[in-house]
Length: 85
Image (cartoon, rainbow, N blue to C red):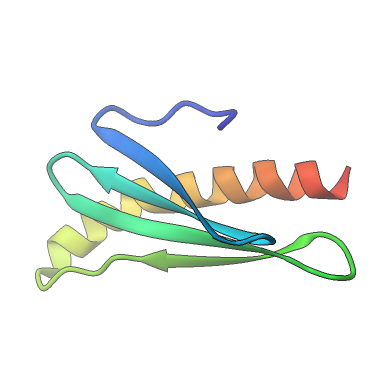
């Protein structure tokens, strides 16, 4: 990844198929934050799907969202720029 992860956050890249993969983000205290799925399109570029990992407590979900959304946007922007170049 071409960007810095925040403290206490790790990312795991998992291949889904030959043309798709998923990044899953984990926080050491808040647990799983969410995932970003990338699927290559036959016409070029890729389709990006982001999924926030919700919690029973609304305040925990909001803390996860505050960390996850900028990460998801950064990794999506980086990959989109790479595939459209």
